[in-house]
Length: 103
Image (cartoon, rainbow, N blue to C red; front, side):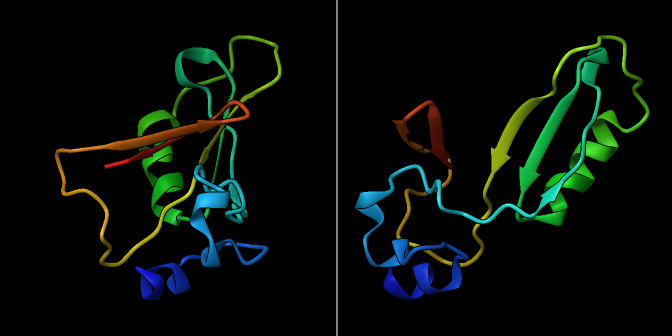
């Protein structure tokens, strides 16, 4: 598992102790764009261009209908093999209003 963590862009040496950051809140999420699903502003923040592409495909043609601050969704993506649960099972953790789901 240590070699997988070395491949994940985590700040502050969290890779040395994932238990100290169970929701991986230290991920750097430099990519973001605001979309308007059902007219509501939503800003996904991510480290994966695939997340932005998927949001564009789903909500890119939708227009803003409501004047309010965007909701933020932070999605950190880690690639590679891991000792995580097999597909079809999940693991979750929550801390300070941040939910982590592994699938």
